[in-house]
Image (tube, rainbow, N blue to C red; front, top):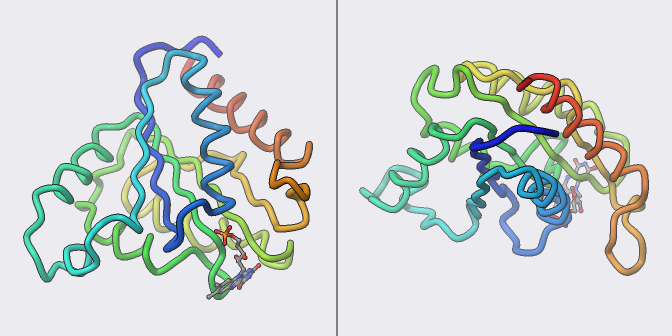
Length: 174
Ligand SMILES: Cc1cc2nc3c(=O)[nH]c(=O)nc-3n(C[C@H](O)[C@H](O)[C@H](O)COP(=O)(O)O)c2cc1C
């Protein structure tokens, strides 16, 4: 990949730290940093819930929203909850202004307990991101628990999905 001076923001939508979706995010971000991307991680579990529900003014949250809309690539990462992405991620996305992601690329990453809901990216997060004007990659990443080895590292199948996403990014940006 030969892209320079691009910025990627990863939004972690798990309510818990050290989620498997975060592990995949880290692998993707490392690939981007190796190619001179600036990267940023937004952990929604660390943002005040009252602010996310618009009950408080929160300058920190405003800054986070601004940094997302100023990114070239937005990575959404979430476990599958009830056949879709988490409510935590949804309340954050609801704060983004209309069309604020036009001309932005989005790479959805989602994990699940099994492969049963592997199409959820197509009917869950993808239309939501498109409603904000974003271009969602074709090569999204869905992984499930048994694809992680005992030591927590990802199987070759997950690495292949990451390779495909990075290849598509390279194609779209060059
Ligand atoms: C409230 C809740 C709902 C879940 N619903 C689903 C589901 O509908 N489909 C599925 O494949 N996994 C489901 N899971 C399992 C998680 O998606 C799975 O454990 C997760 O991807 C592992 O990610 P983590 O490391 O972030 O916990 C659910 C888990 C929780 C806690």
